[in-house]
Length: 151
Picture (cartoon, rainbow, N blue to C red):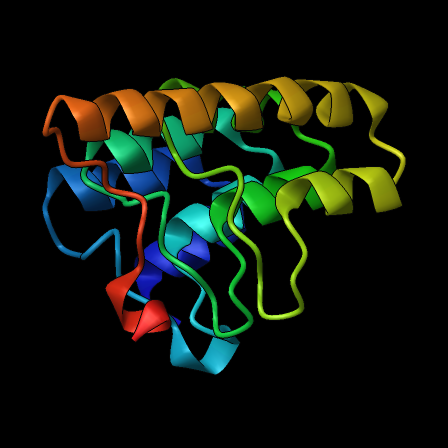
């Protein structure tokens, strides 16, 4: 586990900020010992919206997946972190992707009884689809695919 992964997993915002400022790490590095989690996956799992925002401001891609196909949105939905889900939606992160078992983040919010997250994800998924359709029509690219996982 990299130093950035450790700092994100521990919700140590100041250390994450220092590491990113000094450009000592790659915010998109996947940790093979922890199922290919990125620091953003850890922040989402912790419901740590400030660290998640900081990571994305420094290039962390919210479309990257773990070895089981989980995006940061899956972790945020499991944790019941509406704030992280809202943040991910605000940057047009994919909230609709199915993991290796065919489950979307919405399903995890349902399973764990996070009702506010369920309501939000139902609306956000529809908005995300509309955004992607509009972007495609305008010839805009959308960063919503983890080429490594899909390939």
